[in-house]
Image 1 (cartoon, rainbow, N blue to C red):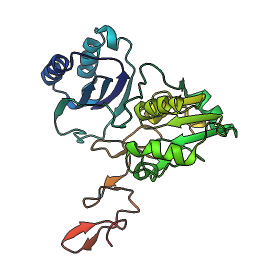
Image 2: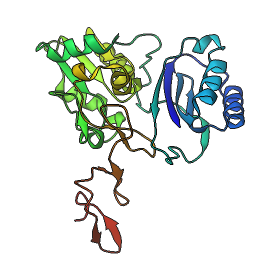
Image 3: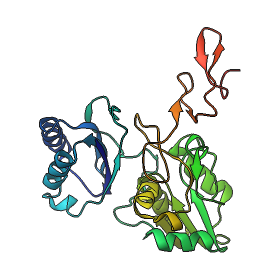
Image 4: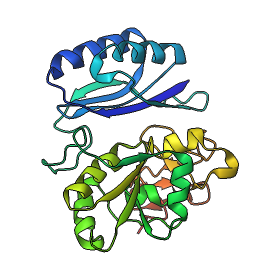
Length: 271
């Protein structure tokens, strides 16, 4: 069983027709997962056999707007369904940000692959910012990266106003799980007057899929938004699970479930 993650910021105007055709083809191929469509583009994660995933993606790429669409593949442990069902939805945004003047399809940061990303991590003049939320960062991150302390991506602009300054922070490098949030965040920074903005191409998932172990700077595991919960440095299903009460990712050493009132909670939320 494999998981394909993909996104692209591109102008779309035939959303309902596209939603119907993508859902029908995925259902015919027995795929499960979520595909989000909006006027700004597509964002998806699908699970199934590799041949079926490739067939769906090959057909999608016949559309000029999705030609060359990059995809990150990862695996799931045997017996893990990853996604419970198939959903193809039309939404206002493919990743909620709440900044109507932010258009990554028109202008975004410079994409950087693994080797160049490591060079940015080593550069003391570069401010490296993790665009994910605090519960994701808690289980893994690149060393010495800045934690914005957000609980939702829509809070990121407030973090920028509070903690970053284009006159002081001349070079900023952003990363996130699959690339979509840092691409949108990079467009926002450019709108705010930041000039030298980089983003990790393909996000953490793309980095883990391609980085040799000797050059892999990732520490911990990476939270993913499906039933695997996390993947490790080798891009395999990780060792975290979710607290049934608060939804926090818990490692094996943290998952000492305690009784809290009438429900079950974890050490994070039991009080």
